[in-house]
Length: 304
Image 1 (cartoon, rainbow, N blue to C red):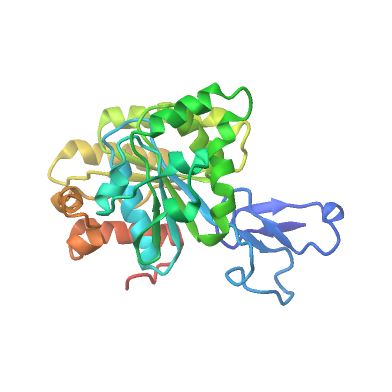
Image 2: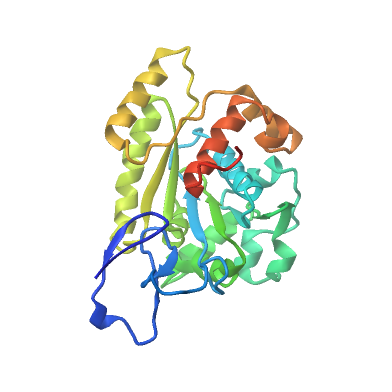
C-alpha cells in the first residue's frame, strides 16, 4: 500500500505483509514525523501521543558569513513564538547563539556529551518555549574526543541528544563553517537540512561543494534530506544578488525559501541580546523570518 506523510507529503510504498501485528503508526524517513498508517481509523492526535519524534533541522553550510547563526536563532525563536517547544543546539566553538539570545550558560554541549552534568543543569531556558544547549571553545575538546573513537564516533551527538528528544517539538542545530567531525555528527543526527546561501558567487560555489559532501553522508542515512535553501542578504539596489537569486530559482525552485532581505537591524539585534522579533518587530528582517517560520511549520496562518 502507498501512504503519504501528512507533514512533508512524501509517499511511502509499504508492504502490508511486513507490518507487525497491532502496529498502526509509521515514521516518515524524510521528515521524521510519525503518522497513522490507517487515517480512517480513530487514533490519538500526534501531538497527544507520548514519544512523538521532534523535527530535527540543521542550519548548515560549510562556507561562513552566510547568516547561519542569525537564521538558527531567529528560526528557533520564531517557532517558540508560534507555540512550539524548541531546543537550539550550538555546535560552533564561537558560541554566538547564547550571545545573540542574551544568555550566559555555565555549561553546554561538551559537558552533556561528557556526562559531567545532568541535562537540567546544562540546558538553559532562553525564552518561553525556547531552550539552548550552548557551544563555545570547549567544543574543540569534544572534536578531539570524537576523533579518538575507534568506532561510532559519528554517532556521538546522536547518543547524547536522543534521550532528550521527547521533550521538544523541534531541535534546531546551528553548525560552524567548514567540515569537521562535529559537523559530520550533526549530519548523522538531523533529518532536515536548511542551508542559508548569501547571494554571492562564492556562496553559490560553496553550496555546490557542500551538497557533494552531504551526498556522502546520505549513502548511510537515507532519511537525511535537503529541505530548504534560504537566500540571504538580498539587496534589490544591486543587480548582482538578483542574478544569483535567479540561478538558485532555476536550480532549486522546489526547495527555495523567500529570501531574507539585507536589513541592518539583523546585525544590530545581537548587540542587545535580542531576537529580530524583539528588537525590530516591524522590520523587513522580522517579516522575512516570520515567512520562513510559516514555511517550515507549513502553517500560512502564523503571525497573521
